[in-house]
Image 1 (cartoon, helix red, strand yellow):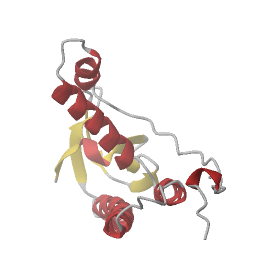
Image 2 (cartoon, one colour):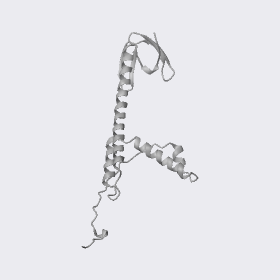
Image 3 (tube, rainbow, N blue to C red):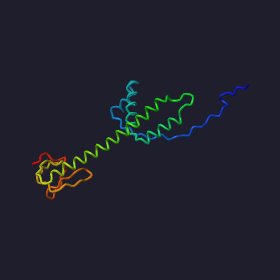
Image 4 (spheres, rainbow, N blue to C red):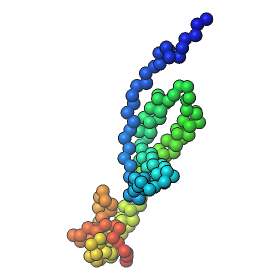
Length: 168
């Protein structure tokens, strides 16, 4: 019986996978702490951890899945990653998707509530102050829904719902 040395066994080549690019919105105080020569290892470690957390928070589901597949393809076959890690990552992906769906539905609900509140003001006298400080007052004749939110029409003027301070 002959023993083949490990060095003579052909190893499969691992294809290069491009990792998704991340943009980090690290606050100035963290980037200063990370680049400061007098910062300790713990401080720079927490700054890089915060930077990684920010990058992961902005990742969408397809980027997360690409990263997970790349991790699976490039893991060391002699020391594979613990299966519970992948289950944890998959459950985190599911949670992120659910939170994104919740955010979308909350935004839509808020828009619908604004439209309903605006339509209930038709025929009522309102007053308030515009963003430039100009006061206004008048009877709402109609409501127009725009991308920036509901606009109340008072005569020939249009005012945003957020500027209303009183309803009579």
